[in-house]
Image: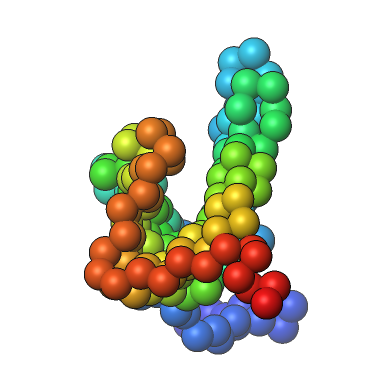
Length: 171
């Protein structure tokens, strides 16, 4: 006995960037809404790979990653983008790589880096690679990385730093 699929079914042969993922989604979007109806955050990506543990999403790897967070009034407070983002649900961490951009408090602080780790609980962003921080007209170039504590509005630069102000850039 021979069996087969009708011609209307076609086999999709695709290259997969992430092996062993349980689910592969294009145009991925996930959001959190408070019980009172206010949007809390959303994450979206051009392509996402979901790894499961005990039938629950454990890790999500997303390409063309974008994350936005909102305050209780629905105003955007934070945004993060990267070429590749990994969401570790167990540790509540984001690992971002490739053209990382972060903006907090409606543009008051802008961060650019090649890779960062972000602790969602502590609101702490860390990197051991070059980080450029722009805040209130001051540009800080942290050659060996930085730790940026959004919860307490402070930052620690690693290694040599170069600071420029808007006035010195205009010269």
